[in-house]
Image (cartoon, protein in one colour):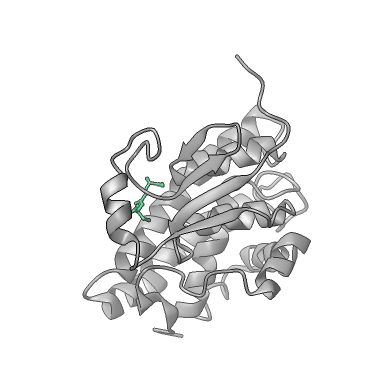
Length: 231
Ligand SMILES: N[C@@H](CCC(=O)N[C@@H](CS)C(=O)NCC(=O)O)C(=O)O
């Protein structure tokens, strides 16, 4: 088995001009102090071109975005595989087998939450769906993360598997940020998760990214997720 690369050349990330499934990747790279990645944007002007070329499996292995191209390296697709790749190369993988397993479980759960969140955002019945998400679905799942944090090996209330965030925590940051817009009291019942969120947004790379104006304004491809729906 070849060893994981120890450095990264030029990185190009192809995605739409929104946060979406690329946002966690931007967060992880920025957290690692990498802000020089190229963003290749698919937008209304070149969408037809993308629709025509996305069945080139060598360039779009799963015919979807995000896709990451690494200079002299592989073409990466699938959000969690991309995050795992960068987390391995950039030193975000927990050192113990047990903690890696926790991260894998967390990744599956955060993907479930992400799907529930985006399904509500894109729903025709988005007001009711988003309200139910904030009041019923999300609190049940966030309670699970609160418990995980209470069991964390890092300082209590910091990160879920170690002293550093694991790759699904960058997706969780994206979703929690979205939930806080929909319902500002989202974290009220979750003190450890509140501390986790504050620590995430205060990490040097993330804080400077948030202040830089580089973060896409649109969280998703629909404006439904940009406004408050409940307390
Ligand atoms: N399982 C994939 C899902 C990717 C996905 O759903 N991509 C959507 C945007 S978020 C997409 O490319 N839509 C346009 C298309 O299918 O051409 C992942 O985790 O990356």
